Length: 209
Length: 191
Image (tube, rainbow over all chains, first blue to last red; front, side):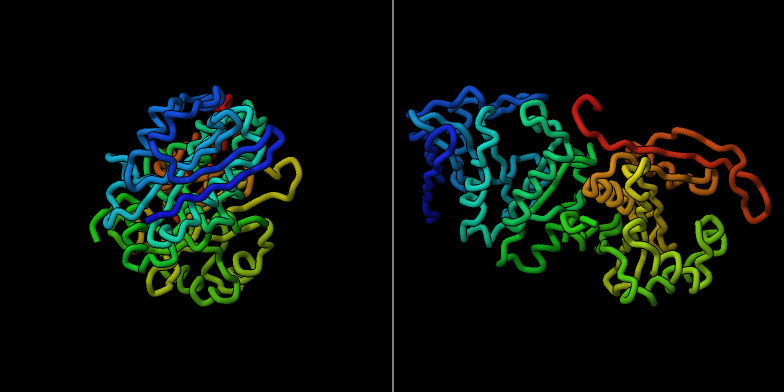
């Protein structure tokens, strides 16, 4: 049974509590900061308590929230199985899990994502999983951060490399659409060679052994 | 040069399901392998390369012992650890052309039509992104390297110029040179 973790952060904007394995019921008591879902060039699907509660309700998922004073959600980080229909859902056994997250605009420069990622990624059970992250350049908030695509991309790489993620090549069409896009994965220590080979095959759309 | 974030060795799966691995050329460990790789190329293949790779001395000087700050050769190895493909990034010193790279890809005859050339080119593009480069230039001889031109087009290279009658085949016929460019975007305004 996975264990909930909590961590208190003192930030320039006040204390923030990070909580893993948040339940749908808990989310009902909190509100979302208006900066959640604010991006330069795309509309996030996770902009309501309901959408976060739907993720929290997935049995295999881990939803980590960053809660500011007054029960305001200012960031989240999620580990969950891939969405049906995506190439990554075709992995057998189903050990691929996607990680993604967001900090609310206004809370994007106070280093909340690194501890949330550490809590979500470095769980012991993840040594039996392959965790991946897909970085689409059109999702990145270049206007607010004043970064260009390369600097934003480098930030993500520097955030994830110390956690054991590395870049992998893939011909998955959405990732391949732009050379600036990123696909990174972390292969758990207990993953055996035949499974690694299956993952390599899947990177190139081959699902048979 | 910052190549560590690129994550070599990188696995690839070819069209026939074979696994090959990409990594940077090791001038010492790969010496014999690279000689054997170039030995497989026909005279016609070698005719269109930049160096006379039938001469081991030239391979040592131009490929193995070149300045690896400016020339980055990437090799694809099969399960037997034979080199089956090679892609190269040619950079400029950090001046007016410091943001530009030229790329070249060569694939061993038994590994052609297995997408290895395309995947090597994809890897060179991603390596260029990871190195912070902004423009990739590839030169192809029309009529002799048409499959490479098609692969480059699929990866968003655009023909920016053509030089008529630039190259000659072994019988003296003239061929045009296509100069193809891929720009790496820095912001949304570029899209």
